[in-house]
Image 1: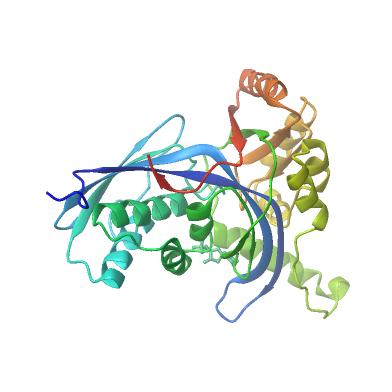
Image 2: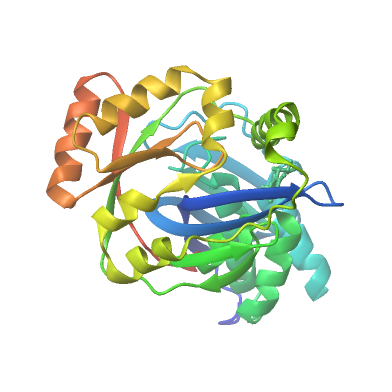
Length: 310
Ligand code: C5P
């Protein structure tokens, strides 16, 4: 076996929090125009990829992740990513993936997107392609709106469907406590609820076209590494529809905010809640408090790098 085709490749890819997410109008392709600021956090999907003639995968859980219902056939975004890369590169080979999931399934943290990004990076290495990151990012965008960010990691602004990325400057580290929920939420359903709400209130909103943009104060807070400033600017337009669909989450949000968090928000389309802490020790205290109250609470930090071979 040559050096360019290793016996196996190990990749890890991070979950994300949208620290700011403004949703605009639905476009012709059915996606909403949006402006978001992503932060990759230290909750990682781990993948071991081995060479094979076909495509197959297995899934296991790292920590309190419910993997029941995760498809392991062509419906899985990781397999679709690998097939897309093979087709694009003209490769007549396959791969088997063993994925250890730490990012909640259907949790609003981009776990499936991280798996797809991991598959692109793993197969690129496994097949010795050396494809430029820009080309992998182009493939990533075809797989889902959050896949390019899982590849890039760090801190970035996303526009368009969320897949047109520009890296953002960020200093220091932000400590978060995540509260996961065993019942996942469907992203299209949450966007649908937002649309329905906007339709109901169309008279109030008026006909003006909404052009989403990231609040400059968010970018300033990220650049300064200032958790207090970031807490004051956190925003997620999917939060109201997510809470409307799942009123139980509002109580947990309140509990986190009254237990020492600087602020809390729904992560992506939910149901994971992300609480921003002032520093590492406050995050540990908050995690202990929320765990003692019976929640599944995880302490993570960001920003961290995107999908990469480890
Ligand atoms: O791209 P992804 O598969 O993650 O998107 C899941 C669903 O979320 C889309 O089918 C769409 O209903 C909704 N979505 C949207 N606008 C976006 C991103 C996602 O409406 N910018």
